[in-house]
Length: 591
Image (cartoon, rainbow, N blue to C red):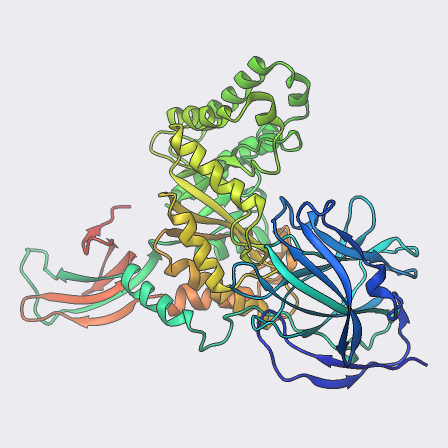
């Protein structure tokens, strides 16, 4: 019979007093707790990125620690890591518990040490059952972490590894007390301890909130005055006027499914109705990707979808002209990679075809997508090809904003990475070499490695220095716990809406029945709002809205302060739509 005394703490620089609890019986050890520290395989690429050693210490819970000094940041977070294989078999659905202690500090002097725990297959494709980003206390004290999860696969002895990736920042860290248990198919998950996932700045009294609210008030609202007149042009003192914001100037949009927009059936009808009610802009999710575009039926449906959106006056993004990897191009493209002249002409022709076919139907184009991970086309043609792609797009899509879209900036805790550096370096390269780029498309697919609001704001400040508009093009959050998912959505929207360089946030889908990550959807299959959906509706249509009943003064004027966007103004049974912009002007809109 196995029993152990354990403690519970809180994650990500937010701590409570530790509470002693007792580990239930029945767990099979996956590591030898007594010797596990010395068994760790530390990978610093022959000390290229730092050094390590094992030392004895005095601590009531352990007597050996691994010390690491990481003095150089690698290209990928997993390039510097430590870990070991599990000492026993694991079955799909097994309930696992991993505990460890961590302390340290960042070389920058801001924050503690970072270690990302990953339980993954020990060989390709390195599929993962969980990821947990631990940041030790900034005061250098020890913190105890518990990660509770279920295995997503079957593994033989040694077939899975307990890995700790540390390539997030230069830092000094100490690691100790690693233990791992397998409780099999136990249903008593709640009896096991867990370090609750959260993020710094989540509390309602967090310091960043007041400044964000002040920025929203200053940047997203303005004062407006209108004169109420009758049919003969005479002012109408005392006229009763209702003013209601109908559509934000800021994009609160979503990716949309061509099949759902153009298809028939009850769900298709609800899809269109829900989209039009809760979102004011769109991205074609898949229909404009090269492989889909070359399929005639998808091609035709995509054009139909674009025309439907245009008829509703919904601004739409084109995604994507060039996604420069073979896996995202027609299969035959790889057969001409050794003929760069032909390859270049084919890509130019594809850009021209898409630009001409969608003229007047799209507001933005992602000309280039994810060039850090997808390098086949640039390897064959050189980086200068990217400049040419923007120039070709500019000629065939006049008046359309052109974007480079990638996913590095805001995710994975907001820490510096080679991917993030490549993102900004690519944007600078395009600008400095005459590419007609208008905006930066910043994806935001969040999992368990959540980013604090203050780090996101700092990253947006860094991107703002590039001098382009910023659009959050692909937002979703998939974490355990409805409260956490809802709170992060609230704070993510607040961060973005408050930042002067950000022009919008688009979710990557909204309905569970047509979503690449169903657990991240805003609406369930029966169209009930999820925790994320409830937060989206509350923020975009309740908290950030303007709806007033006014009475004209002696000059027939009404004045109000409201959010920028399109308004419906009603008086004496008449209805007029106005656009309220940052110049404090109200411009009538003709449908």
